[in-house]
Image (tube, rainbow, N blue to C red; front, side, top):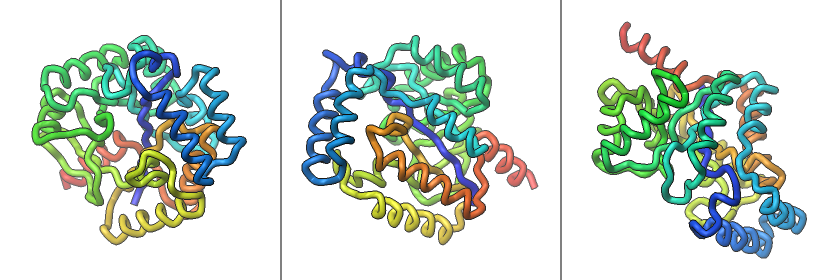
Length: 272
């Protein structure tokens, strides 16, 4: 079983949310709840408050540097459209998509419209123009989908999608590979709540249980989603959990790969 790491870039700055949504007030309320329930320290709480004045919520380069230090690659899904709390302007995407590619990391679309073919195709075309890539994938924001989503994604030209979640092996939808997701940071930390409910030791138990379930299901690939935003001292448990899990998997001898590398392996196997 090989490991695929990916990151959804939902936010770039604090200012992109001001007067547009309730992300910042919810962020403050969430921090207070986590402080009062003992899930974060007073120091971490004040660090989050101070972060509001830095106007920086993405940690893309920090994640890249961490992975480079371990000799592994991952995939970033970056938005090229706005909706449901993803509000950063296209100029930020035009800055970061080439930077991610230049550093040898995989990059795809963090999709917004999951219902309308024309809009899905428009996001594909925008990303292709920016990235100058011919083959790339997508993951829908908030993993949103309906009965036509995957068909429309495949029809748009994407070579893979990573929106579905479940303990299943990758499979083809037309010419597109679907990579189901097994572990996401929000599930680990929050379960179905909107605030953190697990401490560090509890996140370890949760993650090892999911890894065991994947082995029992005889999965060829184990996909982990970690939002780059949380790779900072403002979210200590989140960052510590991710670093622990990645390094645990490395020490246990698991091989890391990317969606594109996995597609080459899967395509070769299907031809034999």
